[in-house]
Length: 235
Image (cartoon, rainbow, N blue to C red; front, side):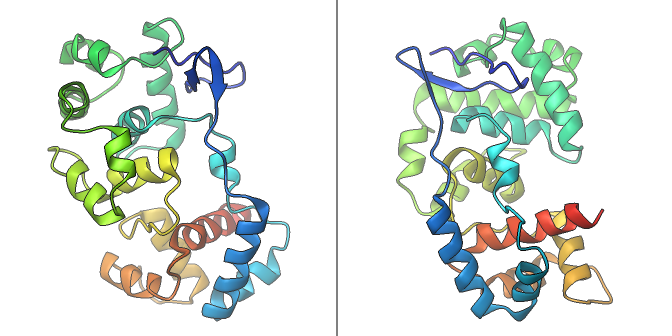
């Protein structure tokens, strides 16, 4: 299945039957309901919402073309410990090698690690992306199967791959499946935003973020996006 590039970006989109398919973003009504719920649940988020009435917490994902789960997983592995700009540039080079479309798992495993390194992946990341590619080929992983699982079980299966931790697994599930209650507790940008907005004198550790996120459930993804968007706005 080919996933040709959209004209405005270097990240591939998914096609079905030759027609562009985009994962439907959250409806404005759903976002409004979530924001109203978070406003009642967390006074700090209430202040963020009131101070940024025009803030769109979903803008980051709406700027991205649709990635299927395998694409998103590769993109997230590439993005480990580097900027989104750098990850996008490396992913674009990978796409360029396949004439403007994302490689399928079968095509990716045909590349040797050295070729992937020439495209900008580290040796570790090159080996990491080849493992899930093989698992998507042999059926141990599939988007259809993972989409039916709970967050915890989907993350458990994805993190069985060496080199894929919760940050990477959650990021792929957020991008491809738009899971509503995922919080990347180890995300440095989110932790920095929490420190700033909650007036903490230290950078919260993942356990502290997880404890805070309990009050956001079942809208953890929306709360995270809101805090990250507010932090970007203030930069």
